[in-house]
Amino acid sequence: MRMLRAPGLALTAALLACALAGCSDADGKEAEPEPTATVSVSPSPSEPTEPTLSTAAKTADEAGAKAFIAHYWDLVNYAQQTGDVETLESITASTCDICNGFVEDLKELLASGGRLEGGENSVEVTATKRINASDPSVLGFQLKTTVAHTPQVIVDGNGSRDSREAGTMKLIAYVQWIEDRRWRLDILDVP
Image 1: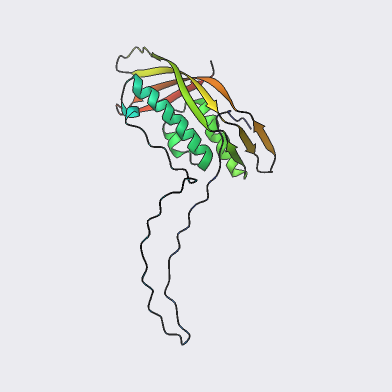
Image 2 (image 1 turned 120 degrees about the horizontal axis):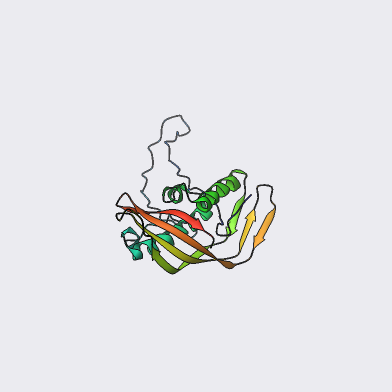
């Protein structure tokens, strides 16, 4: 299996909701249901929540592109923890081989009963350059990044473990403002 160093995942258990049903007493008569209280449950710190797109990442400018790539890596971390890749897939183009390879590898690992432990990523944008296109209405940026990651263990479905040390990697991201409303990651490449 081809694993990009960035991904790692810890599956979270789904919360189960229980409904109270009416009971019968010893003589077969239905008992009055007990009054129930409505309880609001907020996620505990161990239950990851999907990262939300910051206001800065919703702007069609260099700052927006930088905030967007940070959001991408937050979503990678979330996918590694939960296996939920839906939003990650929705913000990447079919042209992003590394992005799509990670998603497919993660799906394959989880389908086999495997999991990732650790491997949280953080990104630093080290340089930006506007992409000049023949169509002046096209807005895109090349973002040179350094992605740092914590130690990670990949546990295959058969229980074999592959440990990886903490480290950094340099990647170049190409992002484009599309549909006049959002960023998309088109290419993630190794320089």
